[in-house]
Image (cartoon, rainbow over all chains, first blue to last red):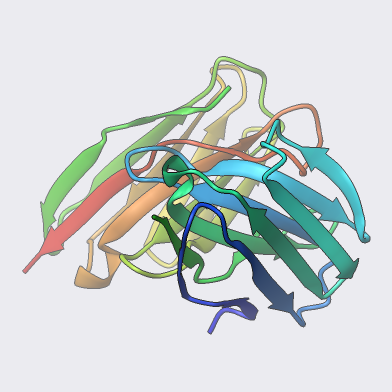
Length: 113
Length: 111
């Protein structure tokens, strides 16, 4: 357990479904991130929240919608996904300065069928 | 723009040394190093800030050459537990909010 908890660990969804990924941290961090990890590709930054305000949206399609209700929780709402969206979705947190590195969760393995 | 890591993969026998390189075409503010074991979360190893700082963590250390925009991760007297994929993450412009990762280097340590 890293201190960043992601649920669910695995998710299979149809292209017309709506689902949400959840991330929770109680490390006292005030920046949270969503990353996408696909096979043979580098970690891709999707969204960044600092003090519950979105500070980065890395040209992510609108079928992915983040939500950060407070500094401890981060959600990624999914709807009408495509098969190419199948990947490991990693949540991370850090202090605002980030000088102690990022703490990653174990990820949600998403399969879109 | 993502940093370039080399080599892509390396196989060692226990006790051998390895060097993993990370280079960028942009001026770097900091470099992070992470290790990810199969099916697990990436784990932070160390951060190097602009200034050519060298850091150490047990038998794993790293250097940062600001002029060459490169960082190297040194693993000495490797142990079986060092196996995993090593990623460098680079930060440009002083914003820690846009850490860009390389494709990773798969390190396998055999007995």
